[in-house]
Length: 319
Image 1 (cartoon, helix red, strand yellow):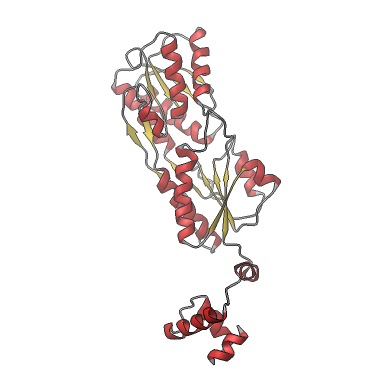
Image 2: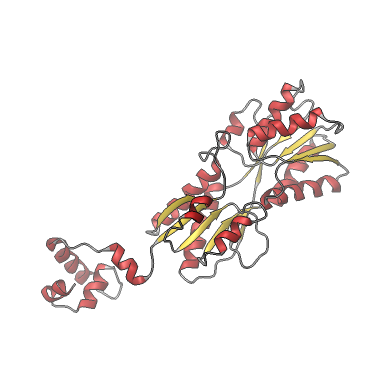
């Protein structure tokens, strides 16, 4: 910068401002200094600049899930969320480090902030990220905790919509399948149960299941093998679970939806392609990713963003 300042006949600080695009430097001066830098082969040392500013211009995205053959990372969660996050971060000249919770704990990356996708069982993942002391935002259910900035879908309303749809089609006796130790799933169940009770329906039982087709199948197969009593509708906490539920019902000689109706959650692409096509509650994943990125960037810049809940909508299909 000293060499460029001397040749351009300006101060060193003017060169610094010109190369960083500072608005106090006239456009003609900026262009002249940049041309000089280009002619002499000078490039900004991004690593050195970040070190001086004590910023990495990098955000970690930590996924709280265990991928498996039955639950791929190419599903809308987390892939569609990642698309919205990546687009927003790169347009703001930020890098993204993608990692999982075990790797994040074992080798924490040097970042300015964290986006956590998933609250974990009883919010254990939130506690882990919180201990880093870094700014963070969460994808999950907004729980009213002012210590957290959370973006998520209206899971309680989604549960209500699922119940109302099944009630509208004359269903009276209901089963819920999902893992209620996750806050999002607990909220879906809460809205579902409240709507059933308010409309004189009967919640026959709940079945715990991981977020997989295999989990939905084994959960329903076990239920059918027991003495739970009759039911005519199932609300599955995800579309993957719903597909397993339908498989189990069909293998047991039952027709969907003639004998038992099924509704899932997420509106995953596979839900529409499944036979029969899964009725679902849709989430706006892309918008969610954009909001997560906007809020973590605001936090790292000293802003005060607030939690935000997005609406959901019914996707009626064949089940």
